[in-house]
Length: 139
Image 1 (cartoon, one colour):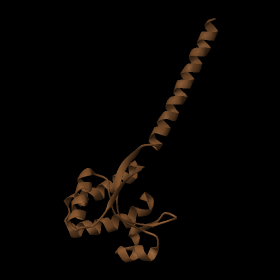
Image 2 (image 1 turned 90 degrees about the vertical axis):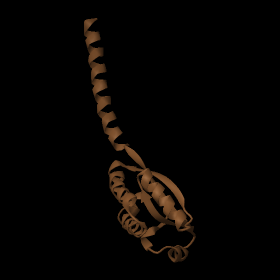
Image 3 (image 1 turned 90 degrees about the horizontal axis):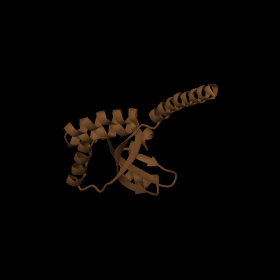
Image 4 (image 1 turned 135 degrees about the vertical axis):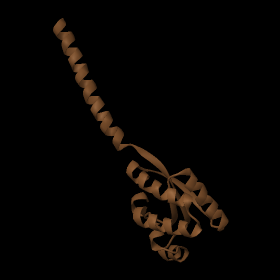
């Protein structure tokens, strides 16, 4: 009887160790954060999208339509600043939220902090650089 109890205890202990290992592994793979993507247009042809957009790096094709994304931010303060920027410039926009990995989130957060401290001209430049650098990874 003691051998059976020892065997069951050992089996449960091994099972706990294995499950903790896989839980740690899976948890790190699914660690994600939310970012906000500002879309300023959707078009059926590339020519229409390029006429509207001032940069080809802002145009992304989803297999059906051409989307023009103008900004990507990670912080709420940067999001509010971009909303104010679009309203002041009478630009129609739509905000999408997307989940990204922690590494990508941290990189975008650095640019978002710059947006929080910038004026309108700098915001345009920061958004252009950010979409060139991370656009394909995000969209």
